[in-house]
Image (cartoon, rainbow, N blue to C red; front, side):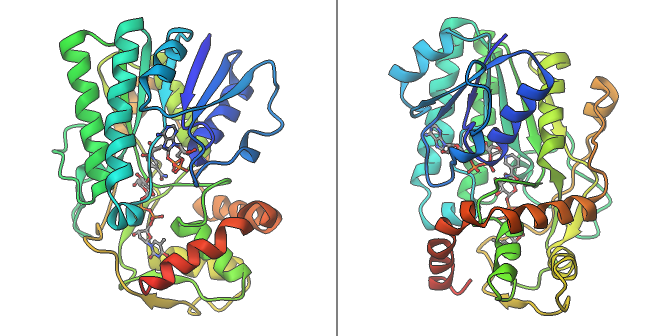
Length: 331
Ligand code: NAD
Ligand code: DAU
């Protein structure tokens, strides 16, 4: 099996490539533009006869079409992924997330290659804190940010290519990932590295916003399960019962790092900040038998804290520029 993984040098994509190497016999090609969010180090140490990196843009048909035709399956992670960046400048989000997905869809259509499209729970907008409902595959799309709107658009493109052209595709919408190799712009790595740098974690607004955390390894096992057993044309929600408020997460990080749990600060809130995400992964569990392995969020977070302590040489180069950009916005 030859698998093309777009965005495979990013946080979740690189963890997925490691997962494929450990759990399958597949040979893997990573197609990645190597933006600021990518990391060659995340792919270091993988067997050279099973994994290769092609540096290129998923929106470039001249690169994408011949490459796709050499593979049996494409797993599409490549995206601009950070909400705050999409508020500062939406244009790369439209190009990569919409035009990139369109380019890939045309390539899989021409070569008749199976596609799995990796998407986000943010396409469903947000929930009230006291809403007993969670997102399901039937929840209407109401994205809030330029990022989530671009991902929502990409999902609609995939569905249209399935229905109109018979493209063999599946979609997954996952909740917030955490784990190794996540860029320091994101919430959990930012707060861990702030504490390591002797500063205080920074909560947007009140900190009551809830995210449904899943370890990236569980995301990878879910995507592999969908590749192996998912029904073409179907969407599967991925989540692991990990709802926590941002305030709870910050207090836990401080505790795990031996600091006063109240030693954080409130900073300017994100514009249009979604209040709560919550996933009902019942379809994936019941239909495909998927079970997450990282049920204990506190243990997974402790491992992640240890990973960032041990990998300062990796995150340090991006840290100062990231903090300077946040500081300019009062965040
Ligand atoms: P990331 O920003 O860490 O990595 C994205 C990768 O895509 C990078 O390696 C980057 O270089 C590459 N890329 C960007 N533009 C490209 C282009 N035009 N052509 C080729 N490669 C390009 O993102 P992530 O957090 O790993 O997210 C990966 C995917 O998972 C995205 O599609 C995202 O929407 C989705 N997702 C993320 C989360 C999360 O919590 N981070 C949750 C659910 C879904
Ligand atoms: O739900 C899935 C989504 O999760 C993915 O589609 C996105 O790619 C991914 O980035 C993530 O989006 P969020 O916006 O939820 O993640 P982020 O890490 O940016 O922020 C998590 C929460 O923490 C959110 O409520 C904003 C808040 N936050 C974030 C930062 C960076 C803070 O309070 N302080 C911060 O410094």
